[in-house]
Image (cartoon, rainbow, N blue to C red; front, side):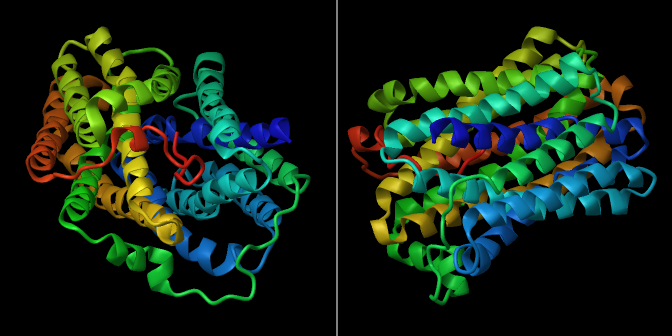
Length: 410
């Protein structure tokens, strides 16, 4: 069972990693540079829609493996078709939106299928889930370092074909019946509003507010860091970006060590501060394209993601009663990857289009101004969190989360 589920996870994140990092450079190369941020708005929209699909349809009507298969087949076709509309940015982004609406629910479905068929979640799931990160890294190496296709449509087609392969493979996966068949769902339950009422407290509201606010400047990294790496003249941008996922694996293994010494508040603060440092490094590096600063900013992804996102998921997990734990995690995803990124991505796009004018590869001094803006925003949010958040959570408890009830993200 473990090899089959690990293969599923590998393909799941291979699909995402193959196109997500390169699409900005491709759009810039074919004259859609002003619309880059729209390509990175589709995921937040899908993150908001996904809970309704999962709660209303996938969990109540159809077997998990069949829904997984159909969604990946449809999403794969959308990715393959997207380059046909490179002369029509609205239609191109529309195809990416179709793909994301199909793909985003499969993140939760893949996790649910894996948990259903393993007996020891805390030991088995990390070994399965790590193949997802490996899939993302392999995709970046393939399309960038091997195929040298960062500025072409080839990564979209590679991702689409991988989606079709995963769609077909999903129908061979073991069965999981719809767990809530015959029950009714409410919007409050699906959005996690009921869970929020159960968890309502001053520190928790501060945490949610900071999570929402910090997600706004984070959107600039996902949309424009690959474009910046390419503009700075570094070869194989997507391959360079994969160093962030490599560091994520290392810092994930080190998290129990840091949790035991820092506790949840300072883990979250360090994660936020790492985003400030990353953007500052990019800004300082921009005028002269200082390679070591750019790569240091990328490698900081392990701290940025693990210490903030994963620590936040663990905090919510430990604060939540078992009966609302899944709702609470869904609410956190909605707030960060959904609402926060949906606000942040268009803002980043508008700032970019106003600050970095002309050829993006010839405007490195303007890139410096661009990166200082999210750095300042993130610094204000981190300071607010450090001053306003006060909660006591046992460090040993936080260091041993309920594995498997945290949403996946590379």
